Length: 261
Picture 1 (cartoon, rainbow, N blue to C red):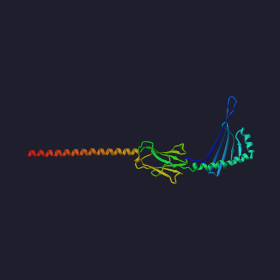
Picture 2: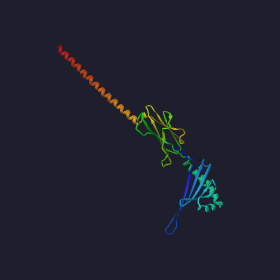
Picture 3: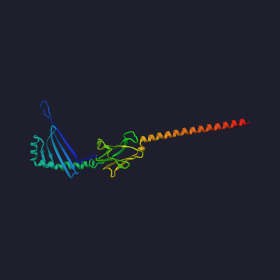
Picture 4: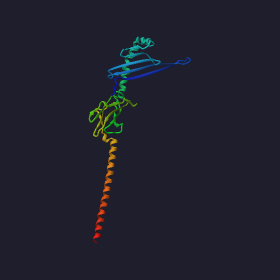
């Protein structure tokens, strides 16, 4: 549900110059190098940006091959640097010496890095059969961020009743997303959260059945306990009844024998 078409590597150099005049003033000069990789290293763009007091005044764009003035302050620098073949050759070569070189170093930890998603289904509302319920497929711990999460009810893909959170960053190069399904649950319904991610060759499916949910299990246990207690009371009552009936029968026999004698 998220795509990254451009990968950027940035190098930032900040210089602070403090003049000794009174009162002192700080001047900030920044150079920021950005490498854009399009289709791996087949098409690479270097954008070197020069800033003065947080304002970009000139940059070098490898797609153009020249320095470009962004303000009047940057025009003299752009004109001078463009007139120096050695400076231009160095900047143009940086596409290889900086961008492509660092791409190969970082590729195993960024582009090739894969972390498999953890998939869990939770019922975010108390289970109430025959009424609207909200069940959530919680997917976390995955990288890269491109992922597809699908809800299926009784094997049929759900669409209109599905909503999703934004892609959340966990701060450890992994991501998290919550995909919710609002639906009416009936006895016998089955739900499946299907996750497609590049770390798995096949989609991962996690099933959820309301009858085995905690709420349903508690209701079932309550019913079982009630049935057992009811059975005990019936058995006890039956035993008491049979004993009392047997006692009454014996009393009647003895009374009849006394009358005959």
